Image (cartoon, rainbow, N blue to C red; front, top):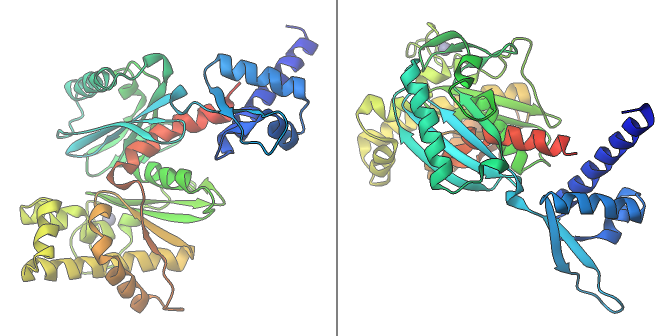
Length: 376
Ligand SMILES: [Zn+2]
């Protein structure tokens, strides 16, 4: 391709991208005229972009705009299921599968209970279950961009899973896991995935801290709409904030870390009950469990306050604990306010919107995000 033709192709790609993004960002179907005005492109250019995007099933005609008189204008709108992405969240004793569309709607979901093992048969089984998940939900393989896989550990820029205490894995090259899957793969830390998912559905919140409370405790921060990873991809390991110096031993070898005090295991596995059973008993005023819960919320508040002191922004709690916290969020906020050294009337704790699927949804959204940014 000569230079001029190459330039023309680049311009065409950029315009297609602009038109797609503009339709994507519009809440309602949008007219060609509005696209011309919003983007400052000519009518023939917008028409050509729309033809391309409609032909590729990324957009479709959205009906006729309500009009106050004169000729009514045709609108275009997004095809939400034009592309899909798969999310696979691996944790110590279960795996969550999701499929999301370009609007981050979860179109399919499944959770399976299986203990993690770093062996061929485990990854082969996951791949087999993922294939089954795609087929049983009638997802069109041609529309699937890839699979995002979240792991509860530190993944560095060379795709080395440096440490995943709850999985008992150290220094594993995650690219080795890719070969078991028939889709393109992308690996991400579970807390970063959860934080990304929360940010994606609320992009106007420029700064958030995300605290993931599962068996492991971790986090993510987004500053000015960008994830902050730190120099060694170890930022936001909130689980290892020391909040009780003489407290429980942590998987990191120190004592009193937030993870050691507030892992969901403290209020489920350690007591020989499920999270559901624990909170059911609390709702029934089981005194012993309420005492344990109070202590748990106190330590959680200590961790949250430590994050708030550094970040000075809203802290969103995600992970498996989140769906159970609504009845206790006011109490948690009060505890945090008592511990917070400054203005103690502010409300700075929120629960995640996506719930226990957040790591899987966030991992899937990585592919959607790449797709939307690169549409040509
Ligand atoms: Zn620790």
